[in-house]
Image 1 (cartoon, rainbow, N blue to C red):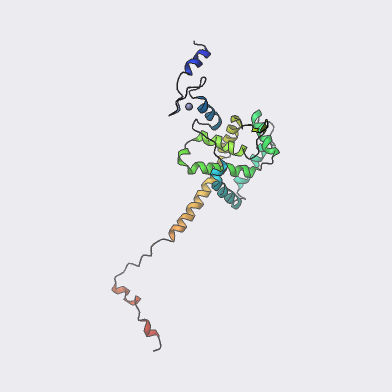
Image 2 (cartoon, protein in one colour; image 1 turned 90 degrees about the horizontal axis):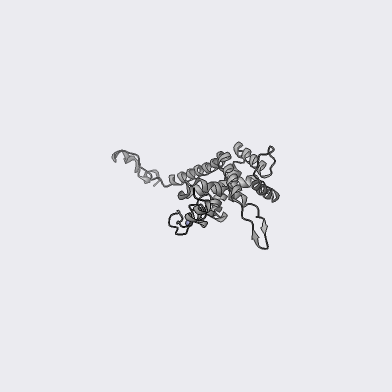
Length: 234
Ligand SMILES: [Zn+2]
């Protein structure tokens, strides 16, 4: 069997498998360094950071919706569950990954609110739903959900003006938690908003319904043309 270093050397002579990329592969990866890193941090080689300004409209809708439905049982329970995760108040050992513990402590020390975190996740979910090309990119969604919530608190400083990049593992773990464990309520918010928007659209459309005259022969409608003057005192 060829030694690993030989395999790497051979592999690095090949092109990255990402469509349209001409760079050489990195290590044992089938991708170049750039696409390998993108996959690690965003779940897919074509992934990218979704910036908060991109989904600010969705966030506004989600905030309004969740305020209106503040008494929803699932919403309250999910908020409580996420609060346990952020403040690590849940059962002993519910979080074991050291990188995840570090990130939760960072959020907790900055007082990140669980409902706010849930709203952020629902806004990202809604953003993905509205952009069809991202619909099937489940892995990208997972990482984006985690990244969005983990970005609610300032990152740790590194050196004089640098910031520590949020590591891939917590992105994925928190993303999976938001997508799957709390998915019922996150998707429910998205569904609820879409239903309400549809109802508003239907209402607006109804105002443009044409007025269709009753179906009858012209002579039957003769009484509909009264001589106005006969009711006046002349
Ligand atoms: Zn590449």
